[in-house]
Length: 407
Image (cartoon, rainbow, N blue to C red; front, top):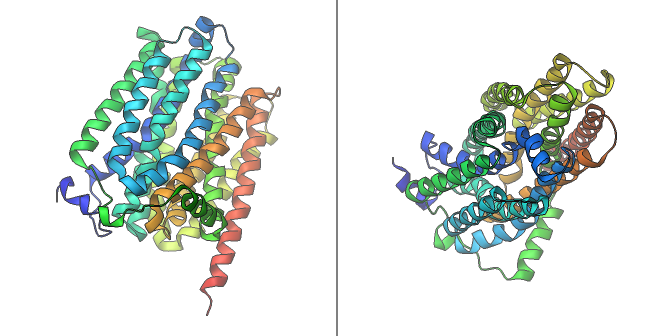
């Protein structure tokens, strides 16, 4: 079966490596454009006259814009289809990348990041909706797990790539590279996958109807409880990205190249967890595995709190590995649980889930940049808090689901 045959959007579509690669590319471009600049913070700050902590605003501004824009992208994609929104969004992302790459001031850099977020949110949010167009049930969970594994290479390997580009060509080359990546993804998406939402499945909701639909999703326990848990969990991950330059470069004295290598090594943890998640879910159930994953993430945050205020690389790495292991199990399964019941509103559901995730990430990355405590302590408090709340709301959702299933 070729990718051209999947346009009918049937749930029986076989899961192929090409489909996973395209979904991963659409999902990963936003993470790539975020994490790749982390090792360049010192050089950017020196040229633009800002501190590494202040540069954390390049992350929070990106996340806030990303979160809000998704609320518009979702209903538009349900009405006009996926293809136009994805290709238009990637085009806008390239424009924002050019603005950021040419920035001569901190304000211009922030403006470029905002335009990037406006564009790339379409690709990221619709990757989940496209997966829901094509798959359901266990196949959907497997597709999201495999996509997450591939997507993990973006935040994992991108700092290494960013440090190499910064060292060889300067930090502006980073933006040139992500712009080229967006063009390549758009080309292969248009040729290889294209539209996955047939005309007969599209909606024609008015603005009041869209607002009402979002309200129904927010009030639906099968969406909001697992969705909030996934969002809070991922905000802990983004907080670790925001804190990494202060912890690894300023605190531990790692070079930008060493920091990049460190992030690259973490990919293998996410890879192993993501590969095992569907298998464990088949044996023990998706909700059980996701609950254990969330509990593991809480443990990781606690390790930062009980450890020294200026830990060595070993202690910090232990916490990071444990967190990534828990995240690698809980995120894809939690996302599949959230999206599964809402196939007819996949665009809206994906947009709202993305809004919750990026909104939470905007808060945690902002807290990392403004709190005047030791970076490790700040990260420990944030991860422990958000993951504990995530565990509680997910467990509550599981209890409600269990009671509803009883005769």
